[in-house]
Image: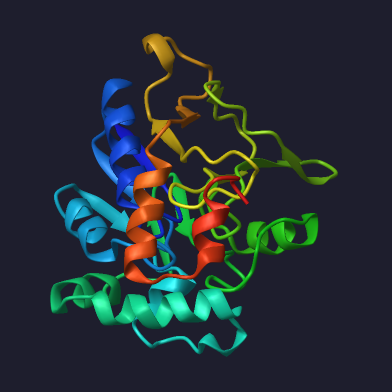
Length: 253
C-alpha cells in the first residue's frame, strides 16, 4: 500500500496538481492522507476540494479549515490571514462545507496517527520543540505520527534520551524502524522552509525493492516539485487576496 501524504494545501490548485502528477510518476498511490488546512490563503478552495474528492481520502481538520467554517475565532490571526479566512468562507459550496465539516481532529490510519498540529492541541500547537514532541508521544497509541501546521518538513525520532529532530532529506528513502517517529511532510501550497516548491511525502508499506528491512514497517520518502507560482499569484491578485500572501510564495516563507 502506498499513501500520498499532504499537508497545508491552502487552496493552491496549481501546486496540488503538480504534486499529484509527480507522485503518480513516482509509482502512484492508493490513498491520500491529508494533515489539514486544505483551504485558506490560496485562490481556489473549491477546485482543490473538488479535485481531492476524486481520490480515496483520509483527512483531518486544520485550523484554517475550521476558520473557513466559522468554527474557529480568527481574532488571533494576523490581518492577512483574517482577510483570507473571511474571503475563503464566502467561496465554499454546500458540498465543500459538508466535506470540511466531516474531518475529525485526529485519525488513526495504522500504523500512523494523523493530526494537524499536535495530539496535545490538534488545531493550535506547532510541534517544533522537544517539549511539544514529548507531549504528543505521551498521547500516541500508534508507532508513528504525521503532523503539519508549521509548513516545515522534519523527522522527529524517539530515542533513549528523548525526541530528536532530524532533517527529512529530499528524495531519500527512510526505512521505518522500531522507534516511534513524528513526521512532517512540509507544505504543498505555502512552503515556509525558504524553498517555494511544494513538499510532500509517500509512505509505502512495502520495503523498497521488495527486500525486507528487518522490521516490516515500510518506508517514507519526501519529494518536491516545480509548479507555476506566477499563475497562482495572478489568481490571488484577481481575487483581491492580500499582497503579503502573494509575495511570500516566491520565497517559501
